[in-house]
Length: 129
Image (cartoon, rainbow, N blue to C red; front, side, top):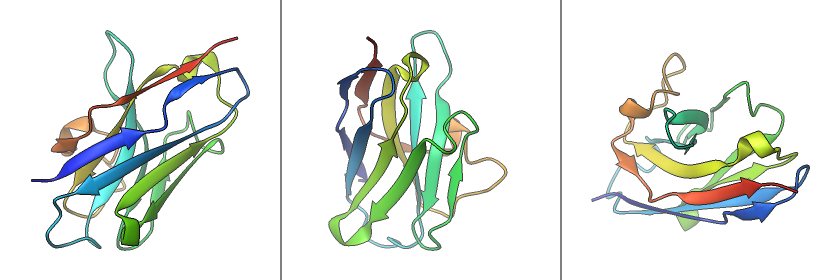
C-alpha cells in the first residue's frame, strides 16, 4: 500500500518562499517507474495540477501558473519528493497534496487529478500580509 505524507506547509507573506516535502513508502518495485507530483485545491474548486516528476527519467512538467516560481525535485534514496515554491502570492493559498501513480508521467495529461490513485492528506499553505 503506497502511502504519502506531506510536510512543510505554513503561512508566509507575499513574495516569500516555502518548501514542501512528500515522504513516500510502500513502493515495493518500480521506484524508477513512477510519476509523482503536487496538486492544490481550494474549497469549491477542482484540484489543480502544479508540477510532476518522472522518477526514472527525471522529466518535469509544470503548470503555467507556477512555471518559473516552483521547482520540483526528488531524492529516491530518501524516498522523498519536494517542491520549492518562490515568489508566493495570495492566490497560491490552498491545500497542497502529493500524488503518485505507478507509471511514467504522460505529457498530455499529467495535470488530471483522476490519473493518480495515491494521495497524501495535504498540507495547508497560506500567503497573506
